[in-house]
Image (tube, rainbow, N blue to C red; front, side):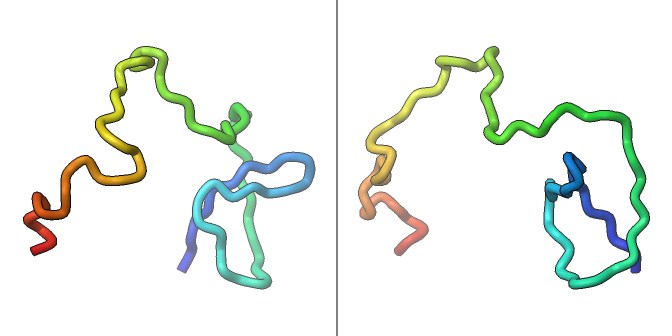
Length: 73
């Protein structure tokens, strides 16, 4: 079965964008797509939603007590 994997080729190296094939040796066919911009190393929120988020309570502990969690009973 043929499987496709997405990667960026840069300076002779492949950087996998999704899962990496779990094989040691394989015959491959490479299809070069048009130039794509570098993949950002960190996701950045859109400026359209900048400043609209609000943290409710402690970001380490839950906002509600365990007594309020019906799913845990």
